[in-house]
Length: 99
View 1 (cartoon, rainbow, N blue to C red):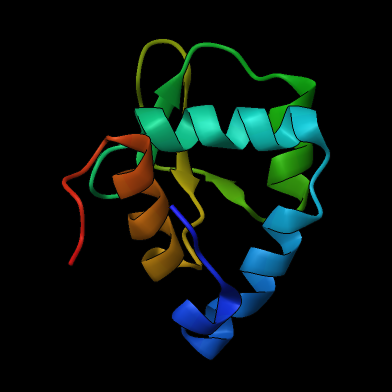
View 2: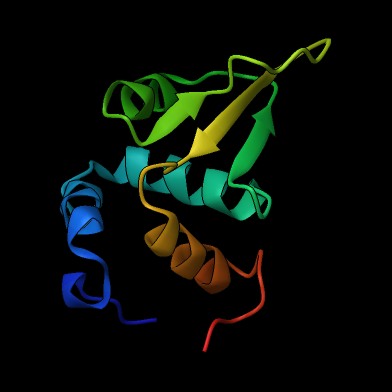
């Protein structure tokens, strides 16, 4: 999938630039979270890695404060970039392809 910033709304282009500048370990972590996320951009994990903490600091993942699961953590993945998230989910195979 070839994606450029021009394919996104103006307010999501900064998120795209941030993604492009991430270190490889953070890109891999974010990609895995995107693959595991649902249609509401939520992802549950049992661990918090250092890469996840850095992604949280950068605002790319946001801890779901209302999650009351017995164990693990729930995160919103790229909550401030819904169009970009949908395109990445489609590329990851977690959602059907978009037109």
